[in-house]
Image 1 (cartoon, one colour):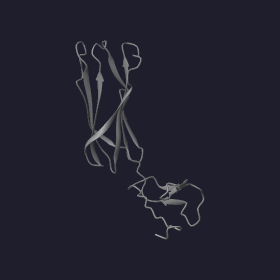
Image 2 (cartoon, rainbow, N blue to C red):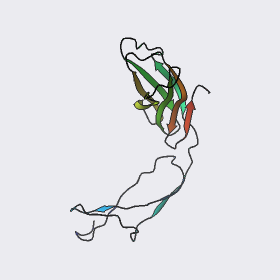
Image 3 (tube, one colour):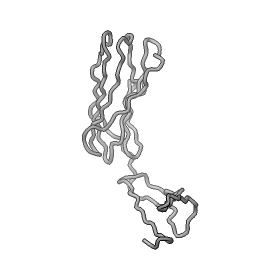
Length: 168
């Protein structure tokens, strides 16, 4: 709204359900005109500089229903093999991410070997989701043990992690 030389800008920020309660400060405000000129001068007048989020705090960790690895004994003697990781997890509010953290040994660490696979959400909803990812083992890779030292880490939208590893 406003005029060509004195505009008024409105924006909306959506706070997720069960977001961490607290005071959130706005640190920058960028305004761009049609000539692509940007102004990030702060503080502006008549601008809300913080918002206060209230409500229940999400302290419940996500729950893992299933975790599968397939195949469990890949043979790379003649061809590369893909190992697929699949996890099904749930949370009261939002299952945000999943990853597998491991160590590749033969019997010492193999230089350049990956140490994690970030899984992608492939099905489900925000509260009940399936995540899948894969690791390609190259052909001719020596006999190797993959240890889930970091394990499976599933995190909800509030940052609460569930960690399943060999020590658990």
